Length: 323
Image (cartoon, rainbow, N blue to C red; front, side, top):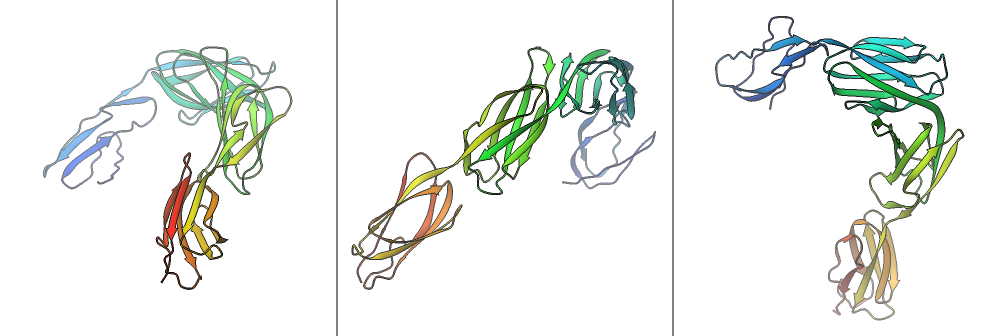
């Protein structure tokens, strides 16, 4: 597989390559242009090839943006690096020029203390943290941007070991059918996680990063409303474990045998008795069994691996024989 990129002004762009079958894609010079074909496949077999491309300048349409929720006279800004365009406004609406069909992204900049909650309009707008992506909107379009005050929401966890990685995913929802609400994904390695959210309604889900030895035992998912004051949620995580019984056969009742485990946790036990029940964190372990009791061969098996998973308790049996 070869990767090659060619840039060309008006006219042509050329490069040399070996024989073979290659896929290609073409990027127009800006969002204001469309190209056909935009991608394809070509077979190189010892002779020069020419691929003809047709560029067409897209028509210009007006994309109307209306704000809801900001105090009267507030200054808000739309920035589209893709179109190299920045529009400031102190009124309730603005119009930006866009190619038709509309395929662009822009960022909203409301006044301090406010954020974008939802987008109401046709097409396929997506909203993530104030960044808006529009795709396949044909012709002039109108979008309503719903802003609201930002509030601080803090999640408090308990039960995780120090330094564990955990996350919270929040998705806004609206009673307005055509609204596109925000999605926020935040992570933490500490006991607390604070997120600035626009006033509104949200569902949330929490989880633990790899290795996933914990699950949420309380407050793992739910919904919350962000009111005009700060709020917090308490979460409790539970360590995932399963029962494993190690059984010894052959040693006298007072004989001491040693079990060493290596895996998600490294453990060593010196034990007297035929049975050693343990609760182990989920995962793959290697084990090693020894004994210093005179007159006995090493156990069979003396080592091996075991997969600890729910829900059935596992058992490992090893036998000592007299010499």
